[in-house]
Length: 456
Ligand code: TTP
Ligand code: MG
Image (cartoon, rainbow, N blue to C red; front, side, top):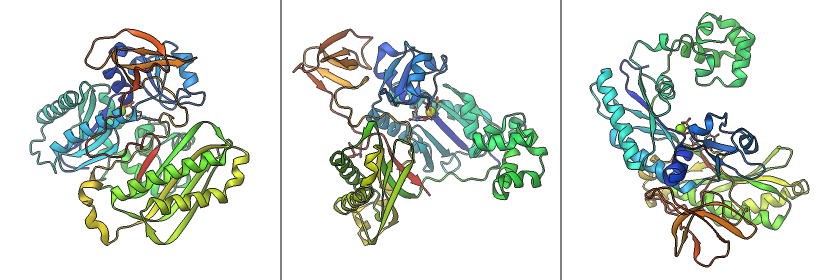
């Protein structure tokens, strides 16, 4: 905990859904759900209008459809999200050299390292408002919530309190009182399981936690966790903001719309994943010693098999070769069907070749991204609801829905008003998928949903 409120936390509001509302004027102010739209789909996120009906992240999409049948269900446009994320991170990088992204839409900023000297609450309110305004400006209309406080814990709590589209500054000294009557779930590291264990001890609020004995907590949670929680109960949190998050593994994986039984199809997927992972590995300037193939069967059991090389590799030939060999060894799993497949690399070394890569530049803005519920796109084919298309005669628009050889398009963009809807033949020669626009400095077109970089 610092003596000044010098840590900022920023989190975009209803991120994926807000990007969709920005680019699809007819959806502004309406319930929008982004996620897997297939039978096994789960909700990635939804607009605040949809939240009013009880829709939430990670909920099966079919449940969301019952709660909010009139929402627009879109399968997501990852590249648009990445571009917006880059724009936001660029704004934050102008405030401080120490920005720690936590995901595409969320980051901590060390204001002290950024040279801020006036930490009175008025000055911080002005700064927070300026950042929020700038984010809206550069992204063409997305809103962010900002929290400013003396620790990561309090700054994140503050931005959550500010949601949506708000700013909360917590003054130094006010932290412990601020959290006193909150549920223990507000503490970082307290998930449903810990909450349940604490409840067994009669601990429901932060105040209860303060009165619990070290001995009974340790018995239930272990001494390290207890020490951490006891500190948090008084808002003690010394975690530093760190922009150079060290990456320890790179992986990509996909959950399929329907289980796969075909080894040839799976070989193609593993090969594609191997190429993608190798590309990211090279971009980060690493060589990997361990290659892992992950397969999940329909009973939700994950089978991971790894091979560690004698040397270290960064070529896609090696990674694909080992990935395919691991697949051969696990071939018997195909009898039950494969629900998810992924390739990962770990055990990194950096070798003499690092002159090829500017480590500080390439490494710094990598973010920890875990999208367990990201939209599933691969193998589904055709158009997906929400996809960008262009028609030679009618101009740009987006796919509302398709089926039976037809596709319904709404012709509008971020810069038009709500536009007209037209139903066309799926094979209309004048209709094209709009080419994907990439974030600057980013050549990974294939990265889509499902890849993750895990920090140490
Ligand atoms: P969040 O910041 O958790 O959610 P949000 O930005 O949609 O809404 P808010 O912050 O206003 O509460 O996550 C950011 C994005 O990450 C979200 O738009 C979609 C994606 N995501 C998933 O794909 N799966 C998930 O389970 C979650 C929580 C988020
Ligand atoms: Mg968010």
